[in-house]
Image (cartoon, rainbow, N blue to C red; front, side, top):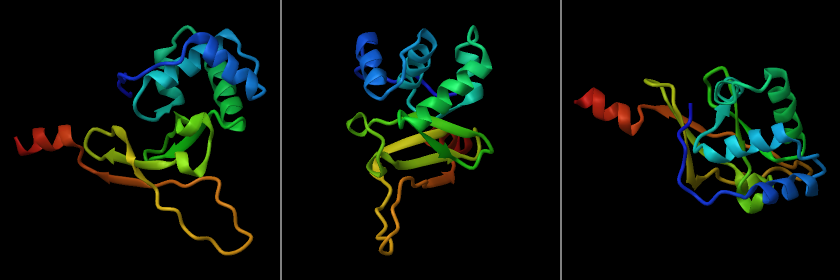
Length: 151
């Protein structure tokens, strides 16, 4: 599961306004899921969300994530773990190809880490092609595991 990060968080009314502006009714559960996704520093799976928000029904979490994907509140990350993971779109609070960044998946501890300062290279596509998603995952040993291994 992802760790909490130390960054400026949106206030509940700001989140409600953002969801409303995107055409999403800001229910209590949607606000709760959004706040959780905002609080983590790495992409998380449905299971991670279910564990963190144990009082929320898993089908409600699934529907909420589906709505968030449909309205470009979150983007998906396929880190090769077999579980699709989700992350808040942060670039100008709008989903865009520019919001995509490199992820690192540790093959030792299975942790996925965002590398936001490393953008996915923009690929020049042939005429008529429009990119709306890019996935770039580097796998290997993370900094914490490499210290343990080299010991």
